[in-house]
Image (cartoon, rainbow, N blue to C red; front, side, top):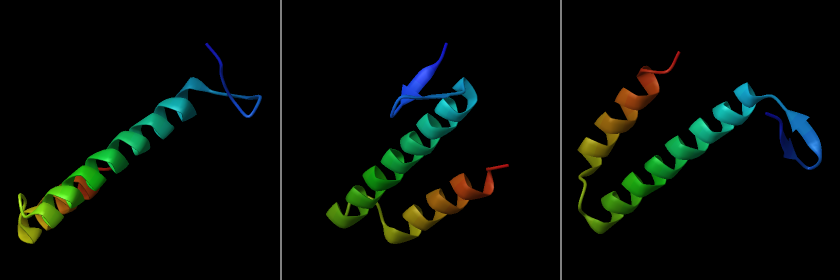
Length: 57
């Protein structure tokens, strides 16, 4: 299957990679919202982001 962005075909691998980055970005902004609402403490947020970024690779 080919996915087209701006009429350029891209490989499924890169499409999946982009989707993964997008999901992680959404998760991150969701957590930032929780911090600003006071649902999630800043310390907890830092732990979550440290864990997710260290698991890459």
